[in-house]
Length: 527
Image (cartoon, rainbow, N blue to C red; front, side, top):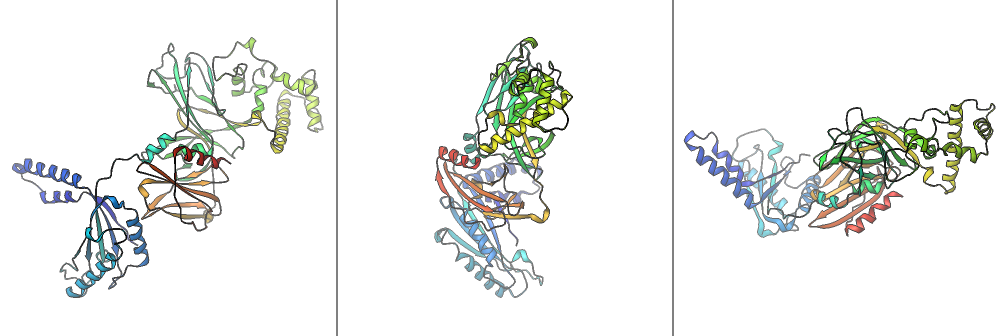
């Protein structure tokens, strides 16, 4: 099936009359060209559809009828000024035969127009074979072109304007750049910023750190974010955006100065990696792998403040974070002195297991884990306490009595600001992959997403055909929700359907929503 659409300013075609102007004609040429441009803009735009026919046939085939119907449904009837049908034939056969064949083809298409375009706005022209003397068949000449003249589109808010109103909350923190700082965000993300981390920043002026947390599926939808990397499907463990500025000047991290970041998670994904977001002009984002992630239980915080004092193995990032946790404010500038640090972290386990010292604690932990031999090293004690904590945490999760401390955390470093995502690749065998077509009448004003119901994966369409978007290379059998948001003339309309990939998609039925209703609608995707 051959399909061709074009949008152009019809009067601009006159520019081809001025090929190779002589030097003395240049001022006249420029004046005529400017006049044509301005006249074309004032008059509006043409949009053209070409419909093709088999040899010696004048009835539209089913695929061409569907193409025509989708094209007409996508037009704004209030903007139609006129329509022009032009019939062409290839040369085999007599000119009289081709002239009649062209007229029959015009009549076939004209019969489809009255439901969408008034007869008074329609004109037709039959060019037949245009007098050509040729015995070869040419597929592209057996066609009828439908050109629609449209008024310029009125200025209404766009889909980008709609999503600008839906953006997740941006949290702002003022920090002293000369001191180590930990930021604790509303949804539990924690960011450790070392002193003097920013390029070309004054140490005497505060720096504003802005953080956007996108940890839930509803947040990803309102932020208009998706989860792919170079076309491969990702599963997200959470996204954040970090920016820094000083006196309206955007800042970058210094070389070899990394942010150390913790993102909380209730259900860790397998093989997580750090991805950096690259934004495109169409508001889409492509994620590029940028580092490794460590997964740690929330109750590991008990080790952080004084792990080195008790001779336990160095905890790296956790030890540094622990020095800040005695206050647990949302923006603590600098750690307390070592001698003032909260050193009850290991005491928590001594009290919990009723042990007087480390050796007795090792024996208690060995007994609870049914070890044949008593733990003899501090590293063994560290690992044993982690295993006990894991079992107890799982029991609380299973019984529904879990608390914030039962969360796991993704731990990683980032040498960049901007969008950061914890993701894992969702690999699928090629034989399980398929394609899905989503019919949409108004492609230009509709945002379509595929939301996976069993994981945090959201896809945007790979492309569009006449009257539809399509997704390709998607895993057959996965449960998803197709969500379409239309924003036209300032009004929001939403349609959605739950299906398994591979099943037939029912017709999407749109219903109007207000902005608060749309926000509430997104929340259902978190369950």
